[in-house]
Structure formats: structure tokens, C-alpha cells
Image 1 (cartoon, rainbow, N blue to C red):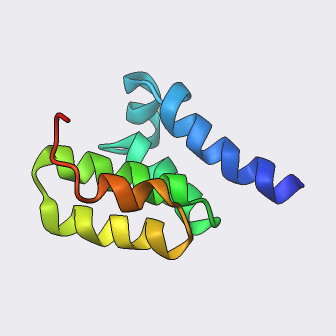
Image 2: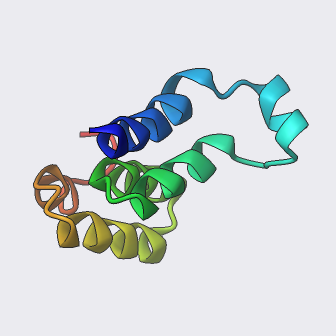
Amino acid sequence: MIERFRVGADVYIANEVCTPTLADKLFLSNPAAYWYRQAYENGDGTGAFNLAIDKRDEGNFRAAVSWFKKAIAVNYCEACIDRVRPPGL
């Protein structure tokens, strides 16, 4: 139960808490990406999925496909649908 909270906390931090001020304090160029990666490394496919979306929207399709595959590998089913959806749809 505690591990599941930890995984959800990483995604929450990435989505809600990271502000430019916090990013400056942590010396991170993209604090959300850091926390999404932490979530993925703790077994949460949402982190990999969100990184894939970010990379796709930046136009970095090679990295996006890699992250979509990682999300699919941990059975994050939404990644199967969004992997083929072009940006903006």
C-alpha cells in the first residue's frame, strides 16, 4: 500500500507541485520530466505515458515512441491508443 502511494505521489508532484521556483531550487530544466521518470522507475506507467506525450508534443518522435513502448510494457493500456494519435487530436 505504501509503495502504491509513493508511485502516485511522483505523478502528483510532476502534475501539480512543480513550479519554476522549485525547478530553480532543484537545478532541473524540466522538473515534471524528472518526477514522471521517478514514477516510471517505481512501476507507474503513467509516468512513461506522460513523458511520451511531452516528447511527442515537442516533436521528438523517436523518444516518444520509446516512452510509449515503456508505458505499454508495464500494461498502461491508454498508451496503446495515444501512440498512434497525432498531436492535437
